[in-house]
Length: 249
Picture: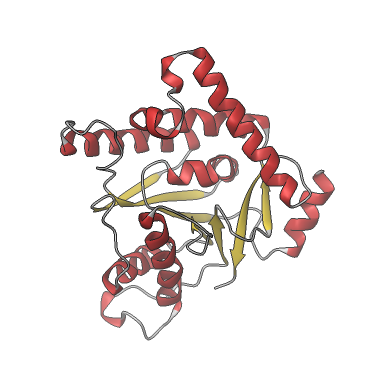
């Protein structure tokens, strides 16, 4: 399996040991679900990682009576705690209203400026072309992120911003419609990813099967993650992996 992973990486434009990484997710916990194990490994190898969260997470509860500001503040704290476990230094929140995100030139520019500020080797985000992707925030974020890379790379774009153009080496799209790149998931990095996801306790009921309710529920969620990594890698003929679609900017 290791040789197959090595072969995939040799055919890919993705740096094996990136120095600077930017993830762009619609909500707190999106980066962890899509690439948590990969982020943990890259951080351990010295990468400087920024998690950019586009929305405020204010719709992320089934409790209709919960105060929105209380939930937003909780989700910011949860994101910071998860980032600490992953070794991620920076978290940035753009605070667009959860569930109401729309693609716009303003959003594209906002993300392009973040890319020029962070100057990442790799940008990771949602695949906006994933078939039957139900969540509009995921679609809008992925498309704005990809278009933001194009804007960020152009020297004649945003000339008044005072930030020089930047072209990442690669874009990795998680939840890919047509995966072509695998990042191996070790048991240790899978455990770190699990712990980071469990930091998002506000999302336990809505997205994780309520693992805080008891050991059985937690074990079931861990089994789901293990099977997800196994089946993802199997799509590309490799071992447990997080898989992506690669774009070259």
